Length: 118
Picture 1 (cartoon, rainbow, N blue to C red):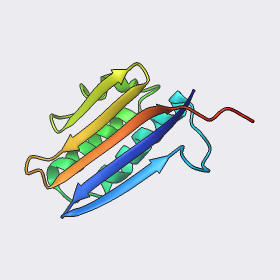
Picture 2 (cartoon, rainbow, N blue to C red; picture 1 turned 90 degrees about the vertical axis):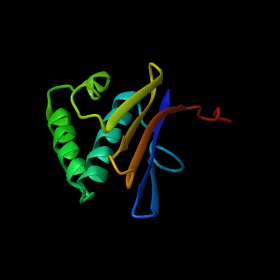
Picture 3 (cartoon, one colour; picture 1 turned 30 degrees about the horizontal axis):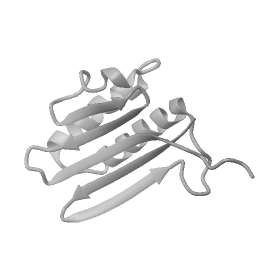
C-alpha cells in the first residue's frame, strides 16, 4: 500500500498547504510516511515564533529523536496543544492549535490507491 502525507498550516491569516508522496513524487510506505509526517511537523512548528508552539516544537523534536518513536505515543509525549486522531491502523491526523487559535496545523497520513498498471 502507498501513503501520502498532506498538511496545512494557518498562521497570521495565511494558509499554506504541503504534501509528500503524491503526483509524480515517489509513493511512500507507511513507515516512511510516518517519518515524513514527523519531519514536516518539526519543520512547521520550528518556523512558528509563538512561545507555546516553540515549547511544543522542542517536545516533538525530543520525541522524534527517540529510538524508534511510536506515533501512538506522540500525544502523551507532548502538551495539550497537540492531538493525534486515528481513523484506522494506517490513517491518522496530527492536529496542533495554540491557545489563541492564531496557529493551526494539520498533518494527515492517508493510504492512497494506486491505479492498476496497464
